[in-house]
Image (cartoon, rainbow, N blue to C red; front, side, top):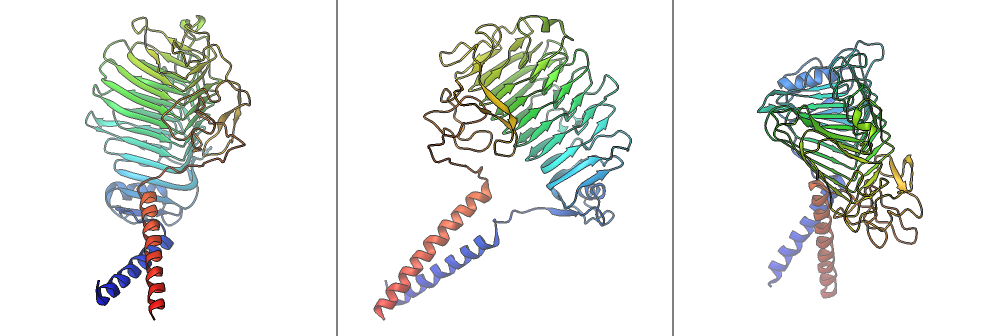
Length: 471
């Protein structure tokens, strides 16, 4: 290589190293956003920001939206009247702030998403919604079978919302999702919500009523706790998942999640899967590395007087396949529809406090039926949500197997010799705990830039030293 070429290479490496270092110091690689509307509660209110985003027109003191918009909340928001419907792609970046209904205001839900709306809620608390109808906290619906809203909730809390507290037509206290759109709940808490409708779903009511395939529904790293369905025969204290007689397939994946202390007067204290009648609905549900405990049912349904009381899970009037892997079922399962004899399928490494063969059909040699999981209380054990830790000596320790690389808190699996059963991996005090991060594109870009900067600086340093020796 000629001296000129070497000099050019040296200068190029210096430029690469400096640029990479500047980007690293400046923060993550920016992503392209159509518009960011800052909600300060004074110049720009949340109501005006939603209108600006929906219409791409400056409204009140809010700048105009442009396509998929981000509403950046700088303050808590207390509502005295209902917000406009969301009919366009919107991200609410809450920054830890709360959107709440004023307790003295008339009844209304907090967020309403209609066809064409695609809502993402991040780092936001939604509370105090109270509606005569469905969806006290968030309601998602369709304008038509080909235009349904979608919802993504991340690192957020949906709590103390209620659907029709004085009537019988309110389903989905925390969230009511009607249609075929995509729903994801990640690293979030759905707690202490109440539904008083025929169908129930204290925390979440997901209902495919459009006659075509729906979902998927994805729940990961999240906790449903203290939700209630209070009507006499309503189902699903935590979640009611299903559809009507014209619906197609509903697909749901639940992983690294906790269902604790939910209750219903009907069936399925933690999770119920069912339909309005026994025709046309197919459910495909996969539950992996989750914990169900402390969920209860009342006496409102005749099936609850038998052995398959469905304290944990319940299935009725649908064609369903529920696969269970590495999950704690502290209670029982209930299959209320005789045509679905094999609705629950164990893929191994599940633990149930119910006796073998009485409800959850845990037949794999690695399953642990009729076993006390020995769980600690629901509390902060690290991570974004409350969880139940395994107590010392729990039979769930080192008895599991999952392809998931972290637990609900984001701690690496396994911590011991093998995985633990349930949502929480007990930390081995004699080992180095590996806290993982959930990388997205920006994380990987930052890693790549860091490596590039390091290599560039090392090579440049080598050239500097070489030139000094030659000098």
